[in-house]
Image: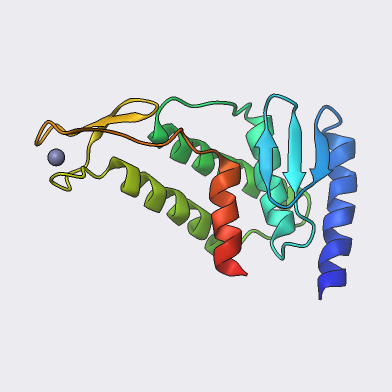
Length: 161
Ligand SMILES: [Zn+2]
Ligand SMILES: [Zn+2]
């Protein structure tokens, strides 16, 4: 099984390197789009490698780089999956709804944890990349530096392995 996956991801990468010669494709332990170096990192051992690499290429095509508000990250994720579905039909890869919903759910869970008011559990308003404000009880709180695709995807990998 692993050999078949490796073979299909390898041949997909060859096509992508050809079609997106301005991007670099580098083997790593996770899937990640780095807008600064225009690099797609991918893990060829992941059973969903083909789907996930098309998703990361889509971030590149859509020129996703940074975001200010957490909700923008969710929007970027949705857009990247929509684009990845177009690419998938072109490259004859099938992207099931399950992988899309799983990854989006992980982002939604993350967003929910960050935006929930620690004092009254209402949903707060993000006022800066690392600050939230609850309009219901006026509580303010700080969150960690905005996460990127890479960190969140790592968590998914752990869950599914
Ligand atoms: Zn993504
Ligand atoms: Zn509150």
